[in-house]
Length: 162
Image (cartoon, rainbow, N blue to C red; front, side, top):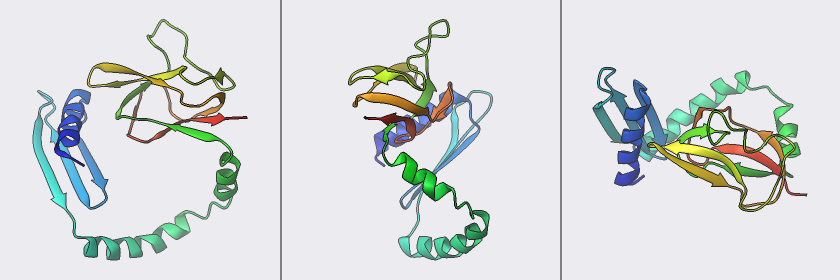
């Protein structure tokens, strides 16, 4: 993560009204806390965790998660979706299925799409960014609820290219 991405994240958190956000990317941990009155960042921590300490912590966590995840049907479901193309969010922001509240949604499950078709809008720092399809096909599943926050590279849609 570079400095500009961190600054954009701080501005985004300040504008959303969230009290605290914790983010961990590779060996970088970021915690942003805001005050509720002015929504200005109060404390920002940037810590780099040594790789040697991160690996032992992950090893004990795996056995604890193993009993909680005996979901065998999840593996076949992943195989079923392997034939679909996943359209992911190119930015952090708020996901909107409509261009405005009084307009119809861009796409529904079952909609045929082509390259360049607008699928949704993601608001980031009061800018509305139209997300266009890079593939042609049919929308199989919409993975995000309207007006939900989305992360960078978060899956938004599953598309059947056939």
